[in-house]
Amino acid sequence: MAGMVNKTVRHILGLSGGKDSTALAILLHQEVPQMEYFFCDTHRELPETYEYLERVKARLGIKIHYLSAERGFEHWLDIYGGTLPSPQMRWCTKQLKIKPLEEFIGNDEAVSYVGIRADEFREGYISTRSAIKAVYPFKERGLVKADILQLLEESGIGLPSYYRWRSRSGCYFCFFQRKYEWVMLAEEHPDLFAKAIAYEQNHIDGRTYTWTQGETLQALLARKEEIIANHHKAMAREQQTAPNRPLVEALAEVLDEEDDTLPCLACHL
Image 1: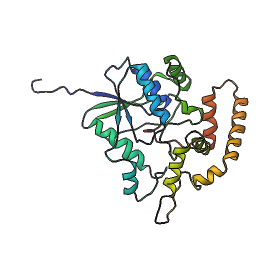
Image 2 (image 1 turned 90 degrees about the vertical axis):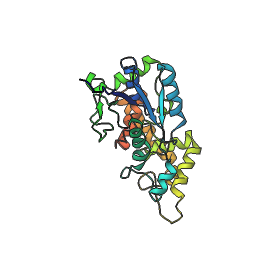
Image 3 (image 1 turned 45 degrees about the horizontal axis):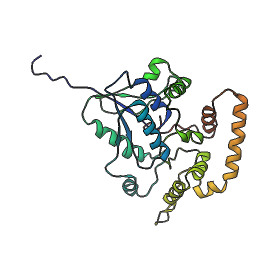
Image 4 (image 1 turned 90 degrees about the horizontal axis):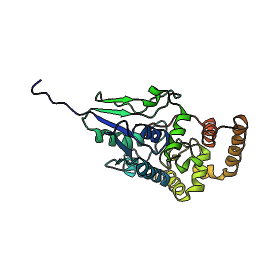
């Protein structure tokens, strides 16, 4: 019809630096050549996350858009009165992940490809904008965790190196970390652990905020040996129960026993 304009629909895929979104990129990078890949960068990520994204770019030959909020974490921490983000107040996800993404999309129509597997019962980021439609290729194809690990292995990309001690992507101070992950952050990145402690202590008005419920990071670290010993016992039990289970899956299972609360999926997929 004369006068009508065919609006191009954008195809977008958010990479978190985790296994599922990476496997989805592997699955679709040839099927959807017009795909726009993005990473919402809080500038509080693990070094391993940035290294992994470089590996993904090199192996797949794709471009990744690094999206950053106009104002960073320190600004929003001040706006929220020094209140650290928590499961009850996830302002970091809202301000540093979702807003930059929505600005990146603008008013365009878009299909958002979400890496949730067929063996999961949850949804990813769902925009309130009707122009953004979420689709779930893993669910549509019946792909489960074993398929995702196979995709990663066969591509040569593999898993990010932090999966040795941590089962989720996200900021180094993410409040969804389990106690063992905090202890291992102190082992792997003592400088970042020290920064996380500083955020807890830097309240001149005497208020107390902690990253982990009911315990400061210093108190948690004082229990380091106990936490590591309990983790090793749980890993031994898990490997005895399922001896053929890959180590990365055993680790995730053990950490979920401690706390299986689902993290923000804008950060973890």
